[in-house]
Image (tube, rainbow, N blue to C red; front, side):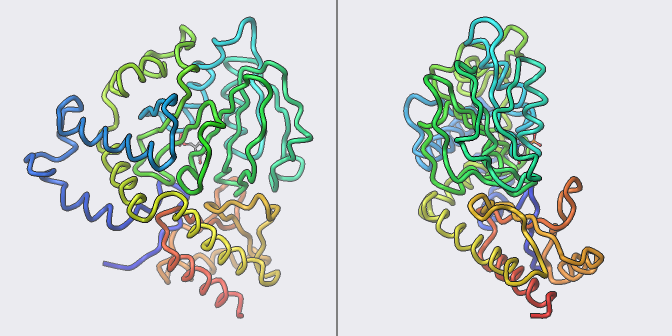
Length: 362
Ligand SMILES: *Cc1c(COP(=O)(O)O)cnc(C)c1O
């Protein structure tokens, strides 16, 4: 098989050992005679897969007992509607949702939420082309807001929060962590809701994780589809309707793999080193540039530009020839982007750094 490193932003690289295990269990899971894909979601085999996946995720993120973990569908984008449909009903009158606009994904969240409630953009990095997180001292938060929404890692702009904001009173903090969940240690108790699509750092597309504090359940608007009412989903252990069973199985293998590697703190240390290596190569001289403020540079998604953009095609062709794949930047921002999720080994980052140096003639 050709040896490649896949820098795709998502769907993205998965641990090789996980794929090998899935391959070996594809036709016959643990002597059941069935593929996981063929199992009833209510049968004892799949229930055991589901329970183990949930328990491992709870352990990895130290999710407190008063939080529920939901396995949903619809991706991060559907959550942009599902979150307001579940949370604005807690507030009397016509509540306001506060947002911090740090890039493309929080921008989409703002647009979608505006269909269900009043939105207030408490701060925006747009004036600086989304190259930093506006400092909290500059945010204009709404007293009694329904919640405060952040995208803690902007996948396209490569901007990652380096702090958890303090919220006023009982305003829940909602975080879209699609592209960096499980990449760093977090304190779940600081959030009301954490959500993320699985296809960046967890597993296959089709699975969406929601971690929600129990007191936030039970307020869904009547227009909310029952299958997306978090209380209904929680009361049915994510099996109100058929969950994405195979995606949950693969995610479970990824969680077990992360535990074997020493958990989130251990993978975070590796992620810090990977990001250090890559940014150092980009910063070595002005052949390449990354425009994000150093404190907010994402450890997972690293957009960069060639000083001479007429060389973009040549750069990408050379990368492909070396097995360094999917480095083209998102169409909305151009340039290049290297996504270096948990499953990207440090050897892959080193191979990219070697190529960056070679291409720059260093
Ligand atoms: C990819 C991504 C999304 C959208 O996910 P879908 O599964 O395509 O809906 C939302 N938010 C962030 C931060 C993302 O990286």
